[in-house]
Image 1 (cartoon, rainbow, N blue to C red):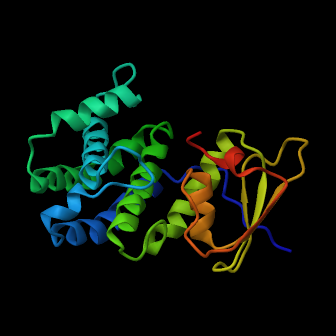
Image 2 (cartoon, rainbow, N blue to C red):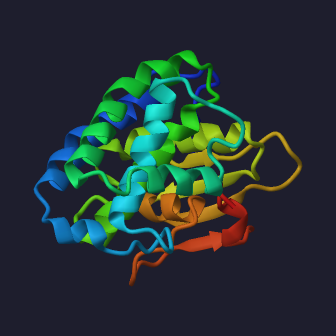
Length: 225
């Protein structure tokens, strides 16, 4: 069996490409939604509304674009401050900032040597959080999924997470995540790619979706845990 692996060489354009792909799909969708939708509570981020998630995403990307990375910048307290600073902004202004960040952050991330690559994946995941609440298709999937999977595989490998062999229902080749150099036998996943993303990012699988996971507990996969 051929196992799909991610090349050791980092693709510096990958996070920016993922952001641009999601920008082109998400921003027009959000601009077409009524104001009340921005006040809906999110499932993946308890205590945050759709607007809060978008304000968090836009503020993170603005920090990237402006190279502002003071100590504790991505802590929960910092995130809450960023959201509070945008509390009086119009929804349109938040979307304007988000669109700018998704457009301009890519080159900065590419030049950072990998330390900011997780920002690209995190923004894409939060877009999935928003899509799920709004009942829109493509949550944790869509056209950005191949790049997201590639980025997820590399991040889990670089962080030394346990190896996992994923047989994906909707992909031709298996995917190897985590660090295969250790002594632990790779865990096994059988199911669809979006559910795999959900498990690795601490999101609940969609209702009615079945999958198989052996050799690892779900909580061990969470890259945000």
